[in-house]
Length: 143
Image 1 (cartoon, rainbow, N blue to C red):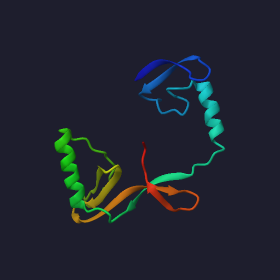
Image 2 (cartoon, helix red, strand yellow):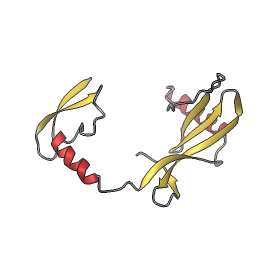
Image 3 (cartoon, rainbow, N blue to C red):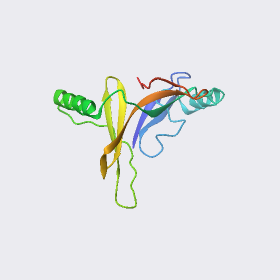
């Protein structure tokens, strides 16, 4: 658990910010604003509805072989093995869903298959979905 003293960017009050541990994800725990100012921000944003969400959508723009080759290039360059990890499902028969994540060309891909049928995979890419219309937009980027 990490606590750090901060000064609010708005009212200049000194406050304690919790950077890790139980409670660090509380909506008023912010590294820029004290709890009082953050509460005002949270209340103001309640009246603004979200416009987009991120969702993995099936794609055929790349092949599994291409994604594996790009990962091998990235690993050879960096020398590190860093991967995104997504939760998997387990079957009652001992099978397990595999979620293999790839970051290639500024896009996030996910290859899904069951460990007993690796040849039956789906390739998905993270996309921006318009909540109001349901239309798929650009590739999702967290910047």
